[in-house]
Image (spheres, one colour):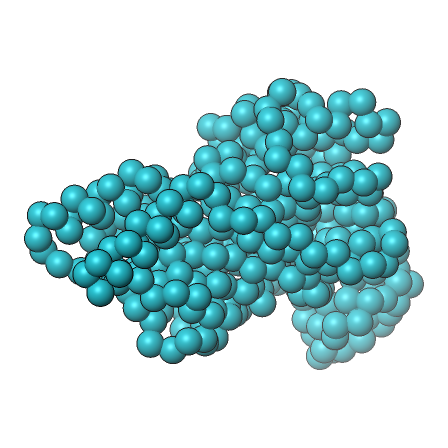
Length: 356
């Protein structure tokens, strides 16, 4: 069995991870199976119930009705009979949370809202979901307050709420579902990689190519379980692809647009590190050190000032596009760079024009 996660924007359920929040974490469980060559014909719901002992048959049937059980990439119903060598994948919302989520009056920057969903521009420093060490003060607590009068919204119900997640210290756009049908539809779009998600990052170093593709399986670092790493041979981890485009080259850093083809834990941060251009001030992946430039004290002071201006990884989820689950219309949202990244970029523009 191979369980696999798709978008967080990059992860695993926050309740079980000793991390603030992972980039790309989804509110879904993903499993993949390959039927044996001698597999006898059996209903898909029975096949999966036998292999997922902690999951009810009813929950599996609901996934099938939602189009979230795939055979060789095509959705099937509960009565489909598994054939030898079938490749089976299933996506399910996590079970209802046992921990009570307390509504908290935390200000939200809401970009858009209707009866089905809302779009939030999350500030850096705000944890998305309650987890180890962060049971209050999260985006979910804020949503519980904002939607406290909504007749159908229950923050403990996994059929509602977050469709994807971003790291605590990453800023930017998130979509939240207010109805189960909306979450199922949006979750399918993320699962099928039909959403549009672009990030802006400031990275150490000057990228030679104007654009490129980074491909390499991402999995947990065996030496540090709080970090992810790339397994280029593909024998470990999960397939991950990031596309990048250089927006500006500024002295010893580059302003880069990154587009996710997949959504793995810390994907952009790990892929840029693997390419040799860590995200600026990314403490987990070495970007909080002076990696490029001079040895003069004036330059070191300049870098320290930059770290102070933007005291977190310089990564922002800038654009988000998807098909509206009710209207069928294409929707596209954009959030400008937050003040800390804007000030940081301007400091490097001035440095680059001065010392060129």
